[in-house]
Length: 151
Image (cartoon, rainbow, N blue to C red):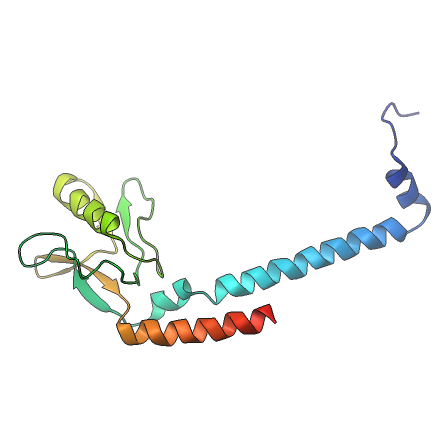
C-alpha cells in the first residue's frame, strides 16, 4: 500500500474516463485560448513596425538638445545598449521623452557601450521610426485583424 492518500478525483479517473474527458476538454480550451492570444500577438504592431520602411529621425536637434520630434513616435527598430544587452526600445513601442534622454545620456557618458539599432546619419545618431502614413495604415490593419480574432 502506498502512504500517499488518494483523493476521490484520482480514484474516479482510474475507474471511468469522465474526469479524463473534462481534463482533455479543459486542456483543449486552454490551447485554443493560447492560440487566440498568440494570433493577437503575432498580428501586433511590433512585427509590422520592424518590416515597415520608416524614416530616420535624429536623437538630437540642431542645438544639441533632445529632439522633441521623437517623442510620441513609434519605434521601428530594437535599440539595445550592449553591454548589458537589454532592449531599451522594441519595434512598435511608443518613444517617450525619458527614453530619448536615457539614450542621449548613454551616448554621451558610456564610451564603451554600443547602442545597437542607433544609425548614424553623418555625425548625428538617429532612430528609425514609423512615418505618419505607416502608423495610420498599420493601426487600421491591426485594428480590423484584432476585431476579427475577437469575434
